[in-house]
Length: 511
Ligand code: C2O
Ligand code: CU
Image (cartoon, rainbow, N blue to C red; front, side, top):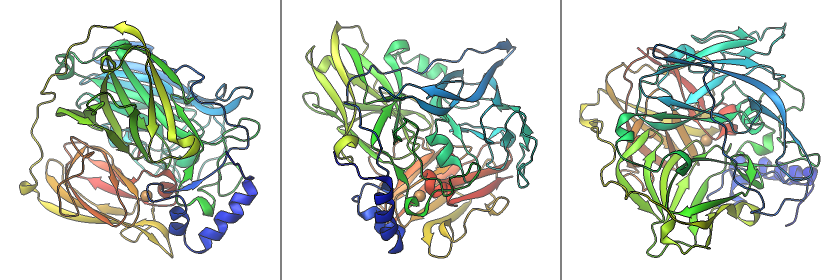
């Protein structure tokens, strides 16, 4: 691989930026928003390290109907690239952070303590969460011992906290793969890149009854791209090298792309598997990179990735895919049946939108004997679809680059307190989302259903309850959304974290 110096790339990118940020993206091909930031150390070889499984967090205590957890956010030195150490911002010392395993209808209270050098904000992505615990971008958790105050902080229902604070999750929602990550105004891209992300799973009885692969056959896979400095640190082009600065350097306005693919924090790992069914909860936690994931080789007959769930939980029935397009923040819950391969086969999970080092993700070695596994049920989750015929309002949101403002929604860059919509709780609305470019659009509080793309049927990856939709360039999609309860201020934004930090975000208020 060729690796150019950071300065050389920055200068080249600055040239591209001068002709427009979108122009910069085209240098990398149509599937890739963003600009590659090359690592300054030799990249390790793929398939050398075992797949790590993030630790499951034990509650510190229980009370009737509630589990209490504690997480300390702190810098930890991680072993990611052989021979160097990576100082990361972590939840509890690991990247990914510890997995919270919850039950539908059972409350969790998570006390976060901030021992990092900067303020943070915790958001449970996909959580049906009261506004004061949703992680409004101004509701800062200041570090322990921080004497100064951020002047604009604490605008949301959650307010400003110092040292530690509690987030309450009622879990009045279906079984689903959620994740938690930092959400600070203007700094989310940097903070997540430094390591602030973890899984948060919700189980329920409907899921229990299906006999899906469970325990050590139910594996969360957090896929990210990262770049490393010569000393092993995570490289990130902050707009200003000083701490507390907001945003990303101008050439990277389209998104920061790394050249190392990490799965659960390890570069291109290997997982030994038995010749049986596994459930994989795929999460693209990358800042900007989109993936087209495919098994190589495909099993005989194809359709190796059998989707059983999406962002908001289980689908009505399984859908077999040859490949999955996954934009930032999307989750695809899939079952892979390794008994379709001969023992001894190495199966790579590849990224057809990548090239060079980013075309590989991880691999599975079919080692063990055929294990017991029940066939997948034909019907998974029940529950009616939203009826767009009953929508009480239609709203339009334009996701665009504005020469004067940068990334914006309906022409406005994000400003805390500026409200773009006031949906009524308990009613269904149709939202029309229009994009100029790749924008993975995410809505807080409740999942939605995709009705159409460009006046045609939804796409192959739009099934089920979604909270993030992979909008393609020059596209108009319609979704049906219904906010059930919890009045307050929530967010709609692009989940390309550089777009989000550079203001492609808006408040809406449920009432
Ligand atoms: Cu995953 Cu508003 O965030
Ligand atoms: Cu975007």
